[in-house]
Image (tube, rainbow, N blue to C red; front, side, top):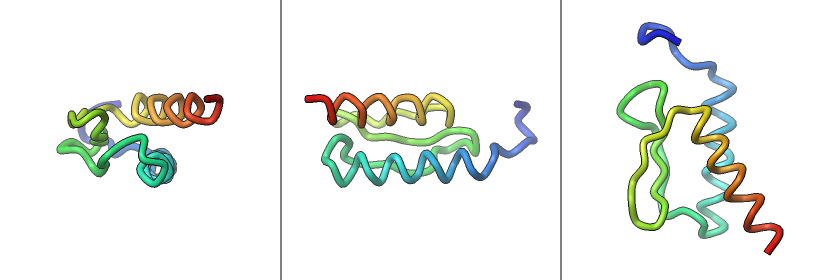
Length: 70
């Protein structure tokens, strides 16, 4: 994806929903749009992480999955 192309809205919406669920489950302590349109910020273990949307989705999905099996 080049820098002039916005990421798909459905991907950003999906990441937002996953982040909300992880936040309310106390798995992350913060979340929001990153400085770049293609990034999302997730605060995990007290450290902000700026991840591309695809990686943010994978990170949150894995975090939520691991919390459910324990």
